[in-house]
Image (cartoon, rainbow, N blue to C red; front, side):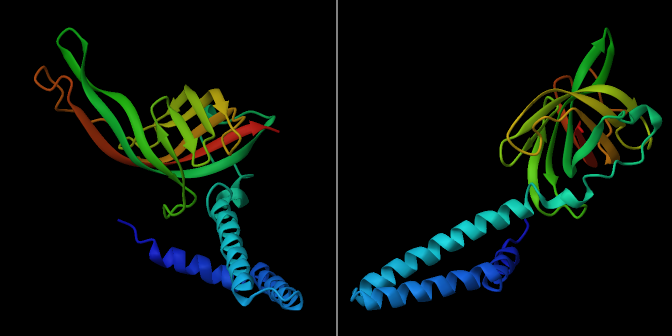
Length: 230
């Protein structure tokens, strides 16, 4: 389990050293002097000052959360990945978002034809992060396939092309968006690429009449690139 205490501590130290916080303190000092000039009680002045401090911290915290969440990878959004030609997105579209996934591919043992059994993909279950170290969770990835941001924006894709780059890992994909909603990072998405996959491949053995209906989860990581019209 990841520890959140260092992140919280660093977050509020950043706030304390920010120009915005200094401005808040200056404003509160002037407000206190105004109360004194108007003969307002010390208790009332302190109560009002405390309210403004709490409200200011809450507002600043929300702003910081937005910056470390959906907007974190904005510096890399203009650079498409190097992919096989079959997976390239055509002209007229640009990378609008880039995220890193860590999770599992869920397979279920299924009879695919009389006497033939195999592990069939049921759904992905993954968390989406803002960097390659899997810090700064920005959303989730689940059946559909669907990508949903913390703010509630989402996109559902359908596979267009597939290329096996690493025989030991799931394929790289190009998908078209069949629906999207927002507002948020996934609103108006047109295409999605899954690249740089590691793991996640269905087992080659173990599927038989006795295991029909059983599920297995295979860990994987990948990167997803989202494209919008220019």
